[in-house]
Amino acid sequence: MKTFSRFSSSLILISIFFSTINAQVLPLFPVKREESAETWRRDGWAAIEKAKREKIRTGKAKNVILFMGDGMGITTLTASRILEGQLRGESGEENRLSFEEFPFSAFSKTYSANQQTSDSAPTMSAIISGVKTDEGILSVNQKVVHGDYQTVKGNETKTLLEMAEEAGKSTGVVSTARLTHATPGACYAHTADRDWESDADICRSKKDACDAKFPDIARQLIEFNFGDGLEVAMGGGRSKFLPKVTVDPEYEKRTGERLDGRDLTKEWISKHKDSAFVWNKADFDRIDAKKTNHLLGLFEPSQMQFEYDRPKDTGKEPSLSEMTAKSIDILSKNKKGYFLMVEAGRIDHAHHNGNAFRALTDTIELSNAVRTALQKVNLDETLVIVTADHSHTFNMLGYPVRGNNILGLVREVDNDGNPEPNYKKDALGMPYTTLNYTNGRGYFGETDLLPEGPKLCCSEPKFIKPIKNGRFDLTNVDTTNPDYLQEAMIPLRGGETHGGEDVAIFATGANAYIIRGSMEENWIFYVMADAFRFKKQL
Image (cartoon, rainbow, N blue to C red; front, side, top):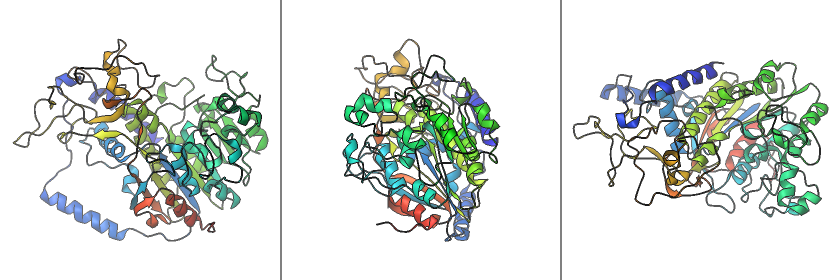
């Protein structure tokens, strides 16, 4: 696909542009367009005229596609657009991600019923069901006590996906995280604990729920009985669906984890006519959308690979763009329309690891997936929304000159308006990067002090004694290395945390004009439900 080729080319450019050690002073990326007072005025007036010509689509939506960038805060958007431009050899600041071209946008207030800074469970529950709820629970109201399965019954909040199935529409859930993870799980499951992804998870944490055989999230996906069930479900999390005695098809030393002996992948096939289960890209590519009505894809035992690491995967995996395209091809066969949720779930995981590079490149792939979808839909009958569930403590700082490597050390502008020849130094006499985190693993100097070098972005934390005499000197460190962990101000052993500020919402197509101003996060549900013209349920 074009999006895959574009990203593959970007990976080549990474090795060309980002291989120079910072001590040698990285070259600036050039501004490739002509700029003057006249061009700024021309571009400004052109933007106003374009906005005036924007079509307001007030009709009913046949289809709704919701793109979720998990943890994709404002700084992530800014840094990702710059990186995407720099991967093309441009300065980057003037670049725009695909969905930043959407005509309507708003701010989303991401607090939950009992959290100032939220996790993905209540935030996605709010977006997909319209009801804000407590930390750690999925698509149930705040009467449910976290971890108490007995409080769930009667307190479930119906999701947009369930409503779509009841209306005869097709539905799909796609994620680069585990399919049973909080964001995709909230679409179809109702539970007192987001971590109850398999029956083994329940039995490890709550004996009473285990004894009562409370349905785990993977089981709820297979037993989903609204309409004729989900038509598309793709992501990671294969171990949650396979019995403990079953060897994983990709990794011979791994097995499933289910204790009930059920192989949910086989149950998917037996339950649905014209259905298929795939676990690798070759099988995925062979799927004929015209002949397949129900597709389950589980491409890893746990999370799918980061986009940067995907080409190295042993079983090979489809990209988010490719999964989006296949999903739309299957779902669009339904004349009544469809609802599709697509999540770039690993943006969040890279941020938790303190690894900006993978967070940004996964955001770029989300932009590619949105572009892919737009090529396949009619916006007169389709609403497309792109948003995030929450932010991260990810910062962009200093006064770097335009075109400064977004992953590099800060170079400022001198008194004559020209780039400084050397990197800016702090009060301790040491340089610093444009991107860093307020908290997380980077405080410990893991990337630079461990003997094996910068190889920790995707591993379990290994902790050493923190630096006691100020910051680590980055003068001879290649901060553009994809495995580099950005510095953090506050040390955390459990990884970097979410941020609590508002995130962006972008919208285009039918009913998109309602996305504007400052919105409660749960209002996104009502925009989508109204686009479908679903009846009000109070």
